[in-house]
Image (cartoon, rainbow, N blue to C red; front, side):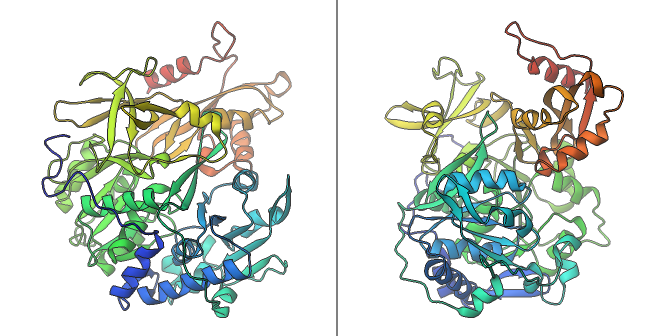
Length: 554
């Protein structure tokens, strides 16, 4: 353990032997009248939060047939309904399957089919993507029920201030028999059965992508989610009087853990933003005296670059943290100058339910992953031989700890490839290269796997390439990462057009075509047409050479 591990904290934490639902029950019992969720001009208190989650649970159990261990999909932007539904699913003894709101119907279908989803909770602007999937999916799989929410119902008298125009529509009706409106679910107020899930029950299946581009479900039990939640709360000293601005998507583990679960565990307040909006963030921080934000660097760049001391009050801020991309030193210095705050970076994955490493608040290092957190064993190994390497050497990070996923759902081959044993422990191979300095801090070097990190979202080039090959004008395609000062990386496609399309195919056309077939963060930001692509001795496209050329050019 590093000598710079926070002195006020033990390395081993006593973790509650309960389900994650119990955190809400405790906070609602201790602070029933405490505001829990702020959204637009409306506030939901903890006792109301609990009651609505129980109503969702009762409906899931008695009308949707959800049983202990079943999986329920949650397909929604940041909103009170997301948080209420999340805990309602847990209260029903089921597992939450959060899904990226940018997923298309085709991408959504892969997850619903893989996880065996029969019930999905979504929002009305996303229901058109869900609708074609209601009913038989084949192979004995069927989505039988969809609960549809309207964000504007929870925004009070400030719908315009809380919601972008695309999400601000009043409540709509859906005539399909499989659809039930959120409003009607709560009106029925069906009491749930006694809560029986415990620490060893499945709590979450969070989907990420593999090197093949196919989604993989990371299985996390309540015990592991609780460890991650309690660890973050202790590391950052989160208390019930705090207030978090929730700007990262809650379907992603960083937002889910740092911005939602940790604050519900503490009984503190959440100010929910469905999408990042700089001006709305400034207003919310001042109005609600926000003390904590977990972000990606691009958001801080946007915030600080437009900060005006005569208009904006950031004096309530106590902690700004995040990860996903290195924070530019100039921006970090500006943040320190304006807010007297140091950006606290961390490191984690969907597989580890957010952090395995965090910088200590009293001795952080810039552009550094930080130290392994409570009960987390991290090492650097040779990615080929898997032999442990000495301090200062660059190798692959492997991690073992309570927060590491149990396994990939229905992926025995992936499990065999991603886990190794050392000293009687199961370690996850992260696929990330790093080195350890003389103080025990981990410093990121490069990704072993081929992956693009677009503002914290993982983009697997093989998946994008496979879709591009579906365009009739594309002969060959190679996808690489393009450095971007705001989002870290963007997607670039190098394309060899088919002979018949060489005179007519345009980059704008291919980008527009891609938007209809893949999530927005996967769509190429730039398309470069080339006469040919370099090949390896085995005839494979040499993407490494193209990536190196792009880096040199930038």
